Image (tube, rainbow, N blue to C red; front, side, top):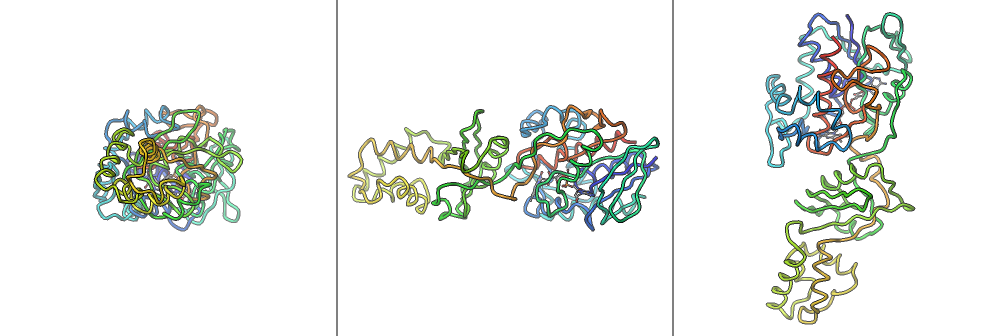
Amino acid sequence: MKVAIIGAGAAGMMAAATINETSPKTKVILIEKNDSPGKKVIISGGGRCNVTTGFEDIKTVLTNYPRGSKFLISSMHRFPPLAVRAWFEAHGVPLKCEKDMRVFPISNDGRDVVEAFIEIFRESKTELLFKHSVNKIEKTDKGFTISFSDQPSVEADKVILALGGQAYRQTGSNGDGYTLAEALGHTVTELVPSLHSFITAEKWPGKLAGMSFQRATITADCAKPNSRTGPFLFTHSGISGPAVFAVSAMAAFNSVGLKRPLKIFIDFLPDTTVEEVTKQLQIVAKENPKKIFKNTLHHFLPLNLCEALCEYSQIFSHKKNAEVSKTEFSWAAALIKKVPLIAIGRGSGDEFVTAGGIELAEIDPKTMESKICPDLYFAGEIMNIDGFTGGFNLQASWATGRAAGEASI
Ligand SMILES: Cc1cc2nc3c(=O)[nH]c(=O)nc-3n(C[C@H](O)[C@H](O)[C@H](O)COP(=O)(O)OP(=O)(O)OC[C@H]3O[C@@H](n4cnc5c(N)ncnc54)[C@H](O)[C@@H]3O)c2cc1C
């Protein structure tokens, strides 16, 4: 039997390795348009590759998928984060779990993750077809015919589609998978970017570009409650960082633009109440009556941010502490706890994943086999599954790649 896997990204490589390990006699052909495998894996996690999450409880892990969590139950139980970690360790990639529960290779080098697969393929009979961009797949009586623009076509009994989404298109995943799946009878849901920064209407965040916070709560004013606490960063055009990415994922299907702005609020002191902040401000101000109020705010926040907030709110700037009224103290505390921003755009092209994909109702969640086209399987981001940052997207690719590989033999 011959299984063709299209796409040598995280999901495709795991599917191929799984077939090699569990059914060495099965002929595997791994087809990739790039000249090498795992381009996105190598650049993931800033080049360090956040392989998976340190969370072990599957229920907790599944809360990190805004779309696809139910579908993932079976494959995630069969190949959970702990098993993924054991798998990589057994294949020569020692891992470490950091304080924030992200798991990385000890070497901090994503190339080691891809190298583990290359080693498996080297030792097995996996046929690797690089620089082969698939442009057509036909279902035949015997199986499938896979065609390319200028190379001879390939026949296979079974096909696993692991062509990824359409984020970071320069890595090879440019949405081809959706077209190929549609031609085989599948439905592609609405596709939007997820895990991205926001562009704000306000210009003052740009002046603070590079300033980061370990913990801030970001809230988007959407129909569904949408708040996330975590690292946060100002950029030249707005806001970014893991907490912002998570909010972007939850608001992925909200329109955001000049005509449809999205209100976002930032709480810079998520572990303190407004009342406590007001009280603290008043205590510090009382001790330093001649101090300029914005410098008192600096007790809580970086000075540049205090200046930006004072400038933006157009009061307090030059007032001395002794001149600030009780109401103004409460108002300032409320501002620190809820800085309003207007998002007028998504960071263009900087999203990490695509939300939306192959309709999950058309795929068997245990085997990843198509319910529409027998012997066709799916794995990875091509499906309507996406997670938050923290290793959850790669974890979904490993788990579904494994399930598709196991079921296809
Ligand atoms: C910058 C960045 C950083 C990220 N960091 C992390 C992280 O640290 N942790 C995490 O969990 N997730 C991370 N992600 C998300 C994660 O990398 C992806 O969700 C995951 O790689 C998807 O795997 P995949 O195998 O489904 O698709 P991909 O890895 O995109 O692989 C698809 C493959 O198919 C090939 N292909 C496409 N079309 C064709 C065609 N027509 N013919 C032949 N081959 C084709 C592509 O070239 C590609 O190699 C990051 C994403 C980005 C963009």
